Image (cartoon, rainbow, N blue to C red):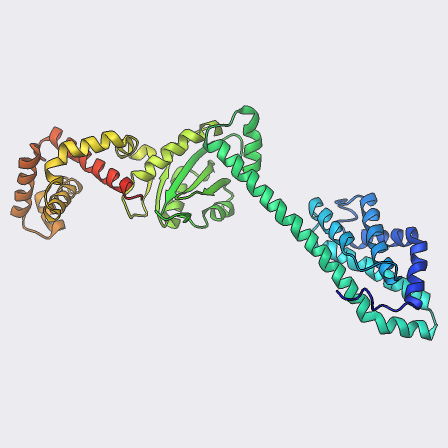
Length: 401
């Protein structure tokens, strides 16, 4: 951008001064050409005629003033134009085409004023590359201004989006704000919803990568947030996109553990639904990609929501086993879990553990001796099963999963 002191003071300077003296005519011609060639400035009326002429005047005065030798090269006018057009929503390619139209009108005027004068024509030819370099510099300044505004709009939109989602998920929404939050998030203000909470156990890691785009492609409205250790979303269900379909989609995309709340009918219930989704997520198997619905696992969810009770249950029922050396403890815990998975069928347990049936019986008897509870008795089996679930959930929470 070193053009400021290299333009000659001959014909170009005199012609530019003459154009400045009839700037209103030049502004009108440029406006007419832009409105004719660019729908964003014409039929769509994204820019008012007054604003278009005001911007034309500022940019033409900056360009012609520089060519006339009256001022240094300045980029304030094109940068300001870029800011305003971004705020109006005119596409950047249309803005740049409009700018080239204005520059072309100026060049046409200079050519017309040179006429058949060979000296003027030679001067125009000699400085043509520098004039168009000047136009390129102005176009870049316009682009910079446009992109600055777009970036700020995106930051502002992101802040508004996060704030609206926070309002819903923290239960701070009332009837007056609900519609505004829904509009900001792009979800319906009325309908059927669920909240999803997922985690990989790693900070700021998405357990459901690309889920928002995937839902959008299906025409499903949703709003998402990646928190420190979880990926959280509100999804608007429809008659065609039901909870089972959502569950299947989440299972396909999950790289972590996922909990889904009960369905609810008003966004004011989002905070309670988030708690349900987080409890369902906490109740999933450690290290799995399991998708668990709150309504389908109320016992694990109940334990996940009452860590003190879960700890006490685990300690009271399984205490003697938990006090064993690591290997013995692990063997008995695995045997008990497999017992419940195989519905107490000794042969099936033995096959799953790759051991003899008598070995299974020995271990089950040892559990009875240590805990005072026999797995073959319904009440005792229930207590042990709940204690195993409590231990799994409390251990998982303690490890930060």
